[in-house]
Length: 187
Image (tube, rainbow, N blue to C red; front, top):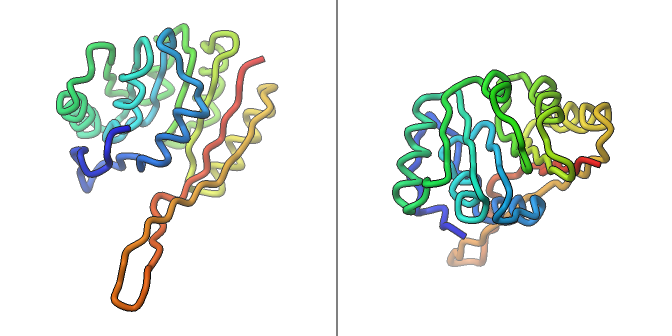
């Protein structure tokens, strides 16, 4: 796993997704070296970099040009990217030109989550996997309901990683990146 502190970051771009969360996403994805992965809403590229080390290829999408630039800088920093295609575009629009998806990770949807999930469903290979990370309760509900409507059996895991900081009078636990991880497999 790549360390959080090693990533380039920006005040204007979310990420990277915390290391412990990336580890759970990798586990839930059951990624193989033959998989084609799409990372929608890649932010600073934390998830992109992890999958670039493990999958056959990764397509990373973000509407924010600075996110694409920072993701490229992080790929370069970790000597990754030979199997990564970066696309600066709206997630739903970019998905229209992508086929043969084994794993789709949705970290940002620009208020188009339902449309994105419908497109992923059309493009997802048999036994393909969808993983959605969500912070807002509304997004969690929307994702689960849409997956059910598309005949998936989603599971949801609420994750709250806390790291300790030693103080003079004891240890203070600080929460980092509380998030839900919603996952589903195509039947």
